[in-house]
Image (tube, rainbow, N blue to C red; front, side, top):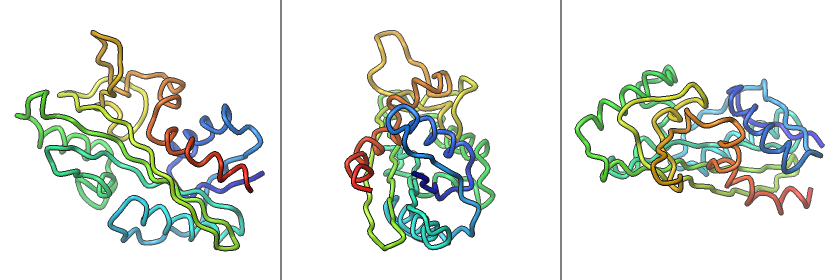
Length: 197
């Protein structure tokens, strides 16, 4: 069964394809080439629904949309829904990461708690709508490391690593990331809904 993923971000398409390959090989996640709606929601769930509705209407297929970002405790949950635009409207991932590191430059480790959040919306062409949320807790490193992942991955140190290991997601393999990421956690919640399609 084909499901359109409402994003023009090839990294997200690849992540979802990797997640479904191991959990739902009967699903084929395809990229979206239609118009992007204005993401004027104030929550991850609202923005995910806006994107999924647009993709379902444009393609006539069941649509999934992910809206996600990093939420930093000491910044009151920011960048949050503004993660992709933190350094401006250009969606410059490197500038976003550098600005966040600069803002936290003098913040000590005990106060660098953060989590990734992913809200995944599922919308059918008939108008049924569902949203699930996954969170991945951790903290922020002082410098970027690793060549894997994208966005804020190189500065995010997930909780639950073995003692003495403090790797960022940028140091993870794709398989390690897909096994525990915020998107993978949300997708697990989506499983029963997908089974009903």
